[in-house]
Image 1 (tube, helix red, strand yellow):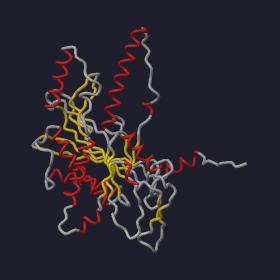
Image 2 (cartoon, rainbow, N blue to C red; image 1 turned 180 degrees about the vertical axis):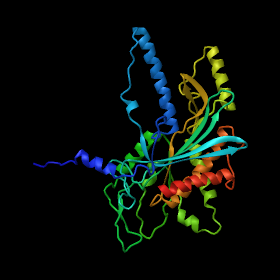
Image 3 (cartoon, rainbow, N blue to C red; image 1 turned 45 degrees about the vertical axis):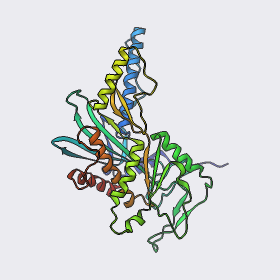
Image 4 (cartoon, helix red, strand yellow; image 1 turned 30 degrees about the vertical axis):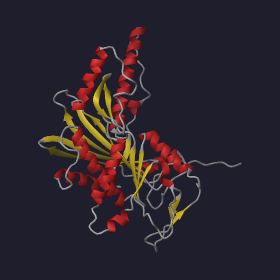
Amino acid sequence: MNVTLRPHPRSYVKLLMGMDLTKHFYFSYTYNLAATLQQNCQRAAEQQQQAAAAAAADAVRGSGMGWVGRGAGWTVPLIHGFWEQRRLSIYGRPLTLTLIARRSRHFAGTRFRKRGINDGGKVANEVETEQVVDAGLDYRTRTPLLSSAVQLRGSVPLFWSQQLSALSPKPEIVLQQFDPLYQVTSAHFDDLESRYGAPLVVLNLLKSKERRPRWGGWGWGGVCVPWDFSKHAKQSGANLLTELAAITRLALDMTGLFVHNPAAPAARQQALAAAAAAARGEGTAPGQGLLSAGGGGGGLRRGGLLHTGGQWQSGVLRTNCIDCLDRTNVAQFAFGLVAFGRQLFKLGLHDVREIDADSSAAFTLMGLYEAMGHVL
């Protein structure tokens, strides 16, 4: 009889006590750091609706007793990764820029020990990066002006590994053909789509030509953009940020970003049109005014009311190289720089959708991504 021996709970406690929780672990008693700003707003709206429905049901039953949630108030989400904030001033308007990176707890481990993908479709070195802009309260509506842009990094979603050797600074990559039909790779992209929505934009920074082709055609899991980072970096006079900006603009056009700005001109026009339609007794088609092409405009429910100055992000940009380090860091900063310009524009803080790469705001953003790269 085979008996599987599981570690005693004390061994887990011992491992936990041996970790330095003062480095790169973050939590908050007032905000769920484990979720994105968009997810937190969606959950807040759902909780408000559930609370209103529960209050109405209690009023009908004549009961003063309400249902208490499943112990949600007893747990505090803890993330491992990176968190840093900077205070900026754009044309005299103060704002807060926050960069949050969340390491995945699935298939976790150091880079040379964890590579590729596991049987469950989870990849190594997966990190979700969120760039949040908080511009305070709108002076007209007294509602928050917020925006966030989310991107992802992760290992090449195939079964591969590297043999550690003290004699070889560049260990040989071993591609294990356990998934010839890319079923697990497909499951990985399905998981990303369930978490972030569609479309998935895959920025592949691997070499396009190798002496020994290894990677095959795994990139069909999303909108794949192959971009040989090494080849472009070797070209004379190449400006990597400018070239990557074109790709990140395409990605942002497809996925959009999360914005809450009820005072935006388009939002006011939509609100007036909706009010006029309601006065005439006309309904709104399902989804109309809530989502537009490319993860476009929508609304945030606040206290049961729909503010049409919002925009949802649907889909995500996924970037990878071999180690998810230097090349990935540059590509993620390029995405963040383009997204930052659009965030400022959407919040009404800037007249154009682009910001100068040599501006002080861009250097501040670069410092955040550089600090994140040192941690991750």
